[in-house]
Length: 398
Image (tube, rainbow, N blue to C red):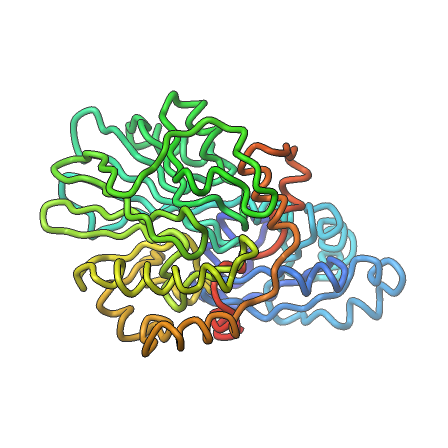
């Protein structure tokens, strides 16, 4: 670690590297207190963070300055990068502080992705996991290891240009785009990516209906039925309909040269499992969730590498940055996968539900094509981390 950053700005990729490498620095967040409480920058090694709103630097600059330590590197952040740039450039740096501003602020951080190749997939297929650190979302790309390199994208992000960049860099041709379910926490790029590439877009028909409005989706998709197989390399990607989080959620199981991978979507996470109430039917869907988890997914071989659709905390990542774990290990370490019976499971689930974010209803509408959202509206709807897991996962992350 160098003694100073010695630069006026850092971008989101540089900040992510600092968060992962335990570099000693301070985050100075100048958003208002409510915004700060709702959504903060976190990493595998989250540094000390202080919140001093921008307006207090305007009203009482000297008093605000005395609250900022001088003995460490500082990264200043605000909503879009403008207010924190003023604090850094006009207030702190002239007084000798070693401070850099986060370019684009929380908006840029919320749109940043990091791609990691899965080393266990070293047979006839290759797998990449795309992490969206600010949201706790994970997206996956699977491709043949040689030849024409056809690729399948699972749960593509709204910023699907990130996927196109990976495909171009790796020489991939995207042939299929699959959403494991109708997402509530983030806007899917599935339909748009399929349109941009000429690929087919797949979704289970049960999730082609908005669960609260009971209206059919206004976007075209192919019906992702249970058991549907997509040949890939020397193996195949097989659809497993596992209702619970949604009525149509479908995990994807890949076998390739003796290696097994489960793209679990919103079913099994590293520290928890998905909640069953985001369609407004928690009591009805919780028993289905039990059956899907215990009678279907946990029946898969223990050596299956689980690649989930979300994480609750950056501390869940492996040393190589991947969010992945063997199913046998999750049986041993994930309490929600060790329930005694269905009745105990349902009681536990219904007692462990986090708050239901109201914006999730509109996100589902956007994903069904029932309403449209421009970039500003999309950023507003996606504000903050996902809360797709049970509450215990977020309590552990504090």
